[in-house]
Image 1: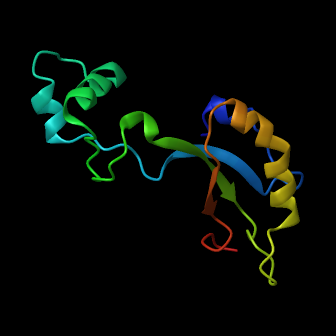
Image 2 (image 1 turned 30 degrees about the vertical axis):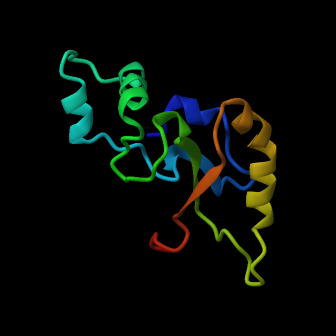
Image 3 (image 1 turned 45 degrees about the vertical axis):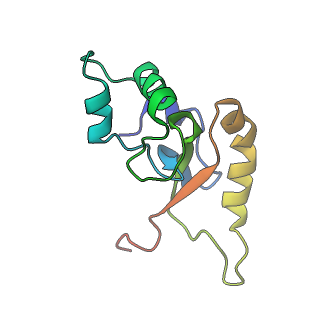
Length: 125
């Protein structure tokens, strides 16, 4: 079942490409034991609390990337039921047309770009 917020991006012309989710870029922000230690006076751990702790203690992402919480971004996950690239290495035209068609909406909604879930090679034919 696809979340309603992704349905607004529709599908490609031949219905082989569609947005099915999102992924963290360069990775999801990781909560660590430091977040719990420095957040002792509160039961809730949200964006405001994380930003407050990062002001006092610096970057706390568990991946040790050095990025603050708000420097982590999100990309749309595109399910691909056909090849992403042609035999010559060029991007599939249907996929390229689909991404171009949703690019403005994607940027307006604050997404950093796209990641691809290659279903074409892994499903039984």
